[in-house]
Amino acid sequence: MKEKKEQYEIWLSEIRNRQPVVKNPEELIKSISDAISRTDEKSRKRKLFLTASWIASIAATLLILLFVHGVCFPPLSLDIEKQCIQNYRRSNPDISLPTNWQQMKLVEKNSYLWERYAQQHKLRETQKKIFLKENRLKQEDR
Image (cartoon, rainbow, N blue to C red):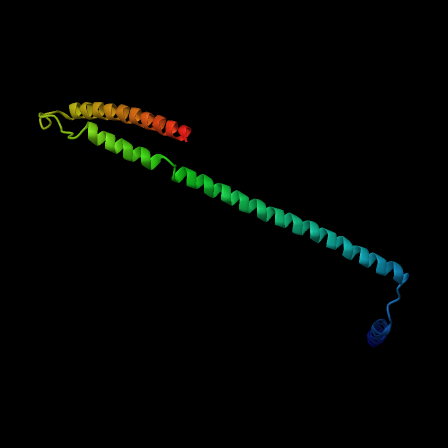
């Protein structure tokens, strides 16, 4: 057992003390430099890809923000609503319930309110259409 251990130690010390033998050192240097240049090309391609992906993501973010802005803040919505409210107030200065409102049954109240809603909805839609036509004509004149 001691002999094997001693033999192992001798063998290990010989391996540690030997200089590595390189066959064709010029070829080894050439292959190493080729590998380095290949990794450099790959890193250039990767940098280009990452740069392009960053630019694309920024453009996509801007488009999404513009879409959200257009949906949440339409350009004519406030003007249309203000105009409709003004027209509604002019055409209906006082909206009152019928005199027999207290005696009406729930079904009658429901039908009355539904009819009023339908009338107001039609009126509002026609006013919106008129307002949009007027704005389109104004924009075309400019």
